[in-house]
Image 1 (tube, protein in one colour):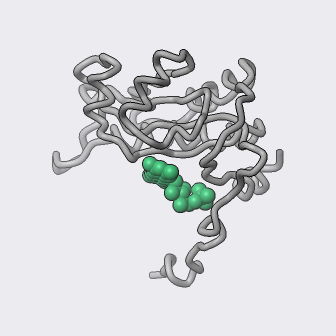
Image 2 (cartoon, rainbow, N blue to C red):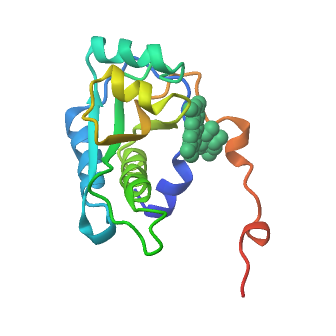
Image 3 (cartoon, rainbow, N blue to C red):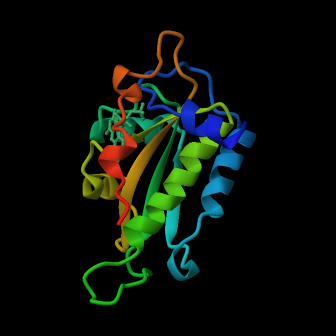
Length: 170
Ligand SMILES: Cc1cc2nc3c(=O)[nH]c(=O)nc-3n(C[C@H](O)[C@H](O)[C@H](O)COP(=O)(O)O)c2cc1C
């Protein structure tokens, strides 16, 4: 798909059909995350794929926002392997993992896979429930699947501020 079309076509899907994400499409999505840039090329991301009934049921205890997706990614990062910026108050962990997640969500759209970025959850609870290593922080959860027949973008999908509100030339 042409890049501009990918950007336009992606929306937050909140109802999925039972159709599963094909293995090769999931592989393409994960590969797009692998190619994301990270500060100092530290690549501290860790992506967990939830597909088993057991894993999806665990997730459902933590968030109401799976919406029937049969594949869900959890994007985490190793907080002990990040680049700390000069000044010492901020580091690259969340940024790097966000770029990874953004690559993947756009790659999903390119593959014709619907998605939603999910953060309505307690990341520490999720880490505990899935027994993630102590040094890993959860950034986000990504629902992946095929939209149900009666699903589609919500009205707010079209509501974006004009560039005059969000861009300033200094
Ligand atoms: C950081 C972030 C967190 C979000 N968390 C949730 C969530 O927990 N549950 C949900 O249904 N949608 C969630 N969304 C989806 C947004 O509600 C949606 O992206 C936004 O309203 C714009 O809609 P669109 O993606 O269809 O253009 C999240 C999106 C972002 C970027």
